[in-house]
Image 1 (cartoon, rainbow, N blue to C red):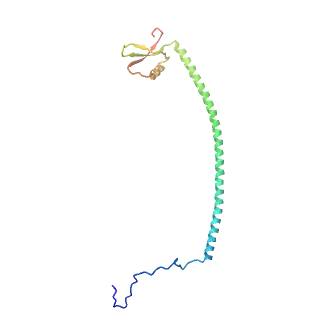
Image 2 (image 1 turned 45 degrees about the vertical axis):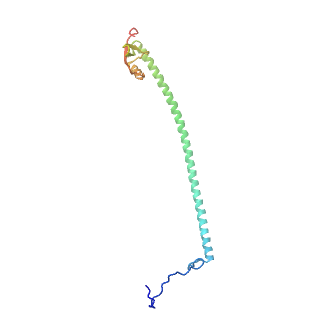
Image 3 (image 1 turned 135 degrees about the horizontal axis):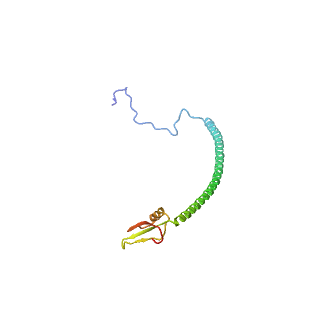
Length: 172
């Protein structure tokens, strides 16, 4: 508390003085000439740096572009060479496949010729209804081919299946 009788106590300012009009003053304000000089320096430094660095950057990008184009041309040439080699290999492969298929046909003819004097194999099925064995159409020169054909027959359920060897046409 403030004692009104005591003259040594100073009164506290309860209200603040009104602020003056305009911008407050600073001690480091620049003159218009100094501001203009700083602006010119900034402008000159920015223009010089941007121009030089932009030209250098464009030159570097141009070099990279030229290198990439050279690599692309080399890759296309290599692709063409590989395509030609692939075409040659396919031609040779188709020729060898043709030779293999011809060899298989010749081998089949030899197998048939050998088997004419021997027996043939037939597939039979036995139905549940009448219990008789019925021979299916087709003859096979060896047992393995008959087994393969039996494996490929669909809907084998409900019947008994067997492969028999027929030594003569009379047995059939």
